[in-house]
Image (cartoon, rainbow, N blue to C red; front, side, top):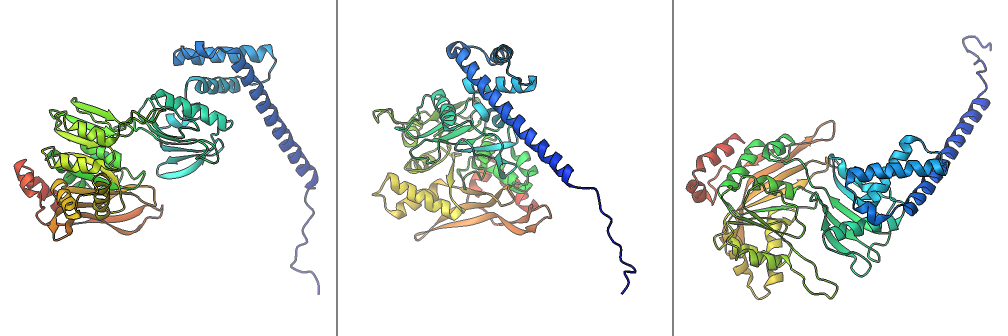
Length: 453
């Protein structure tokens, strides 16, 4: 059979020389990178040996950057170290951050799109950006480098971290919250978890725009804050509890005296009459610890109009309920729980931690008398934080706490880009706190908000 209709491929240009050229270029590039890194390491060592740390630490940030650039340039010229101008500037910035700043974390802290930084040893730094967690290309030199930065952070707030005291909660000068875990508890080297402080004040309009809630729900929460309802915000880690608490606190009247109690101060209250209290860990001898419970009890003696507890996690829950039941209406707190019903169970368990002799019914009676609303927030799989439930605490029937869901998020599907689509179902009934709404002249506004949902 003839080869009619079949085309014999013509031989193309030889691939061998091209492949060899590419391999040679790749090898040359790899060698250049090795030489550059070797030069950087050598120049870094020379700079550290040449600089007086005590003198450098006294310089302001702008002078320090200029001085380090000068030192790097002079040493590179004197020792004939081949680094470009851009590489020298980068090295000078790194040295400045290492000496008085936060080392490789500095650019991540300056990036407003990053909300969380998680350091798992020196070579693995993860960041949360727009709700998604990714591995950052930024690394530390070694675990000793991580330890140095971690100790600097702890020292900045009067705390210490080392093998004898391996767990520390601290904060950065801008208010970002930091948790540090040292070996031997952290097996792969020191670990840091940084919840960044939001520079931009986030209110209800921004939360509605971001899809965290609908406008009627935002209006109901505004009314709840204005008419001094006691509110508990529930959710998982990183779900946006503190952000929502900050947004609600913006509605507090400027004439009220507010006392805040936190483990690590991160609330951003805008009122002029705010007293901020922060816990203190024990010293080396195991003495001097001041717990949240101590601070809540003391706050009751400070003539507060409202008490805001950053996060309720132990026996201070009993003191919080008693505060809410003794004239401190409009108090707020956050708690870790999966649903609004679970939040009540968690509060009950924490009260038992602080007062083991109280009968369960007495605890539930206190909870029902104290709490008006529970808000459930959740970080959903599309990375967006949403309010999924708004429940009122109605009363006690027998041994059961009766609750009513005022708003509930219902999942309907997802968009092509993965964004979750849903809507809110609402309860149009008269809430148990209607007399308080009427007292503040907001009952009509509440009804209009529900009607618009």
